[in-house]
Image (cartoon, rainbow, N blue to C red):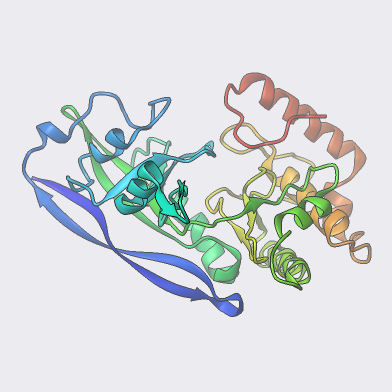
Length: 328
């Protein structure tokens, strides 16, 4: 008997003062007996691309599913990102709807994101360490500044082989990436909120300033920093909300001359501090306070040169470098 996992209801929550819609999903576990029809021989974590049938065919997804699963256009280094879509929305996207004599084909918007972690964990202890990273954000950041997620562990079967698999169902944040490495990042912010109600740009910059201040508090309180280096890790919505969507890559910031790299070989701690500095100076226009100890230490010219060498090595040996910027 296999335990099956399916999202069975979606609750709309108002997200703080801007009244944006955030999605929380509640789940129930169901069981069914035909393991053979729900097994696959290729590990889902190793497949180069994923289709609806790949996800619907997983042994822990109830069949038939009430949702359509589609590969997200952004791909993480540590997890597969899958859009969870309503079948009714897919039908409209495919067949279109007639408005004023013209057929339009609106793209279906996800009700949530399914994240399947690529790491092949050997024990529940290792999984708990991964989840602890998310707990740092839960404890330190307001929910208005990160995409809320429900992590879960399943017995995953492929053929006769069984293993443990870490997944997450995460709030979908509709918006555009904040790119700290852009030639004119403030202009890009202005483009994101173009056409939004008057005052949205002011709101967006206030929310971004709040995120920067909160991130500095995380650093002060925990000695850790979320991954801000990847383009697309931080999203701004058309109404000016700012949310971190890469919530699991939390790295320590040791104040010593050793430059740490993550499990992929990327100097994510140093690059995240650089990204924070870029946001603070080039988008928010802050100069006062940017000479504090944090920036003086991590933006030391010699240290930045060594970080650049590690970046170059990472891109040279990594076939899929995710959303990390190339070395310029």
